[in-house]
Length: 125
Image 1 (cartoon, helix red, strand yellow):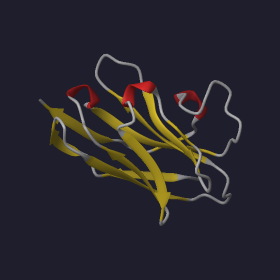
Image 2: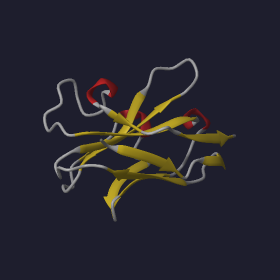
Image 3: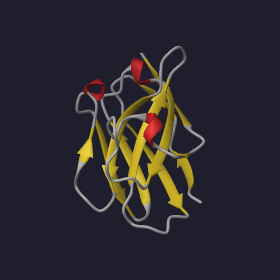
Image 4: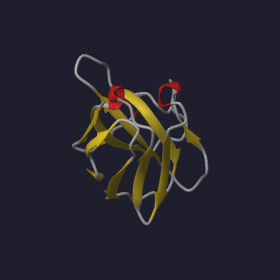
């Protein structure tokens, strides 16, 4: 029974920075993927970052253009976001899954079984 709780969302002006955090508990195995997804009104849920815990392997889609960095330390998943744009405005969700090999890619929402409640990020121009 995995529990995920996001925090750190808020409002920021374009060009600014924001860091999201996700506290995870309930895991009994150490090998798992964690990721951040976002969903804006009228758009599909999209993955913005993924990491295999305990490794330096990370994945990002082209849409974040090198502006986002995912990391894990002190039992907390973080998403550092910089050079934020209005199109980054969305509800951001933390997700986790125990699978090592994910068919369809690590940024595919259907591959994740555990989700947080979300935290809103709003970027104004």
